[in-house]
Image (tube, rainbow, N blue to C red; front, side, top):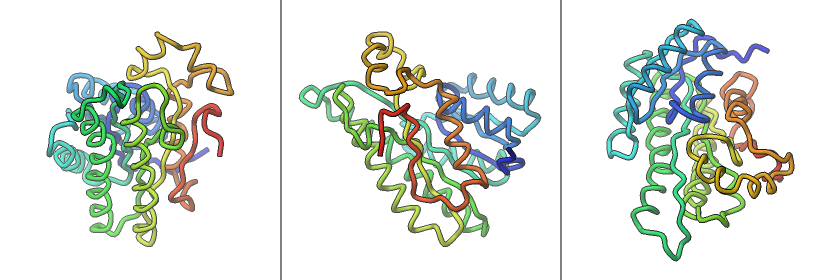
Length: 252
């Protein structure tokens, strides 16, 4: 199937590992030019080189520590400089700290809200103005979570709150920019085998598997295809929706 992504320019945050890396690879396989970004410059540059060599597309690796104030704006400017323009933004970067509310430090809560919610707002705002300024249509995909709808029982209330806020922000933004031809959608993963979840899965994988009707934790690629679909021309009539890629953890 042709997803209409050939020649499209894509920025994916947090794309040196896990889900973001899978999204970057699949986007490139479909012919899109990609910006790989992450805190480790060497990893970002290496992955971009691999993508260029294997997929024959343009790719650039950019270091971005998005916890630093101003880093999101800097990343957006560098991405535009590298590719000339952007068509698709995937807000994937995030943190998943663990602490029950009774023990949670305010800084941990604030950091989670900042990276998981405020940074997507900053980049989405930049993307919207970029597209409107060039009179271009485009796509914004927010990586949310099943926890946005279920909450958390495992010490991730701050994460769940940040992702619930991102869902509501996504819907509001989708309403605001639909008339400009900008689609804003979300993907809600459940548990995936990624570096972010490695410790939790090592400690109690059977517990997490027992919560998933399909019976197993996802591979990143299985969730990445949902994001690629929402970025494609096959999703031009979809906006303000969330695809639940959870193996049945979330059924609505």
